[in-house]
Amino acid sequence: MRFLNTLLLFVAGVVLGFMIKERLVPAAAPVQAPYRPVQAESTAPYVPDPADDGLAESELTKPATSSEETREAGAEDRDSAEEAPVIEPYAPAKTGSVASPDDFFSSPGAYEGKELVLQLQMITAKKTGNGWRLNLVHTGPGKKVDYLYVDDSGELGDKPDLRIGYSYRVRFLCSAGDPASGNKLLAIEPTGGKADWATGLSAVE
Image 1 (spheres, rainbow, N blue to C red):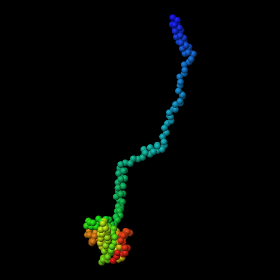
Image 2: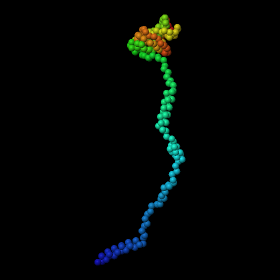
Image 3: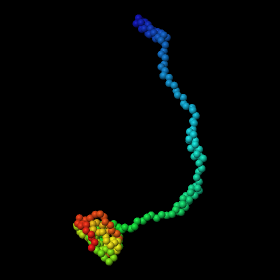
Image 4: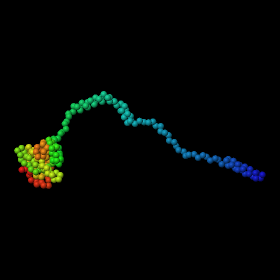
């Protein structure tokens, strides 16, 4: 019994202690978050940009171009284009086809009736009744030597300056497809070059 009495007194003391503590010590105040001012939304009325108003107004008040006016403008452009004078482009004089000497001398018949331009070395220029007969040479692959004879009918004048071994650009009509005959001189001009065997002496005989 003593043990029970002692236990009851202990429990009553603990309960009494809790009751006295609740009355004497106030409850802790709740922790509040720091105050943060809330920014109010802007309620200022929208003021349009005068430049935007001017642009919008000009676009709205701009008269629309009708399809009929567009067709009339196109017709006027066509009429003015038709009335404009047509200027023909300048056409340079025919100079003949530049051919490879190797191709020409290997198959001269393929060039019958054509105007050609070949670069050759001068050998001789002999006087004929109507002008000069030129003898020119080309050294091909394997040191093969080919000759071309061209007849002049007044292009060179009385005293042509032609040098042995010097290189010339010769334009002629290959009427027969034969290097030895039927070739009419149309023009000739020096290139400034010369062969190793060039003497510099006049080719005129």
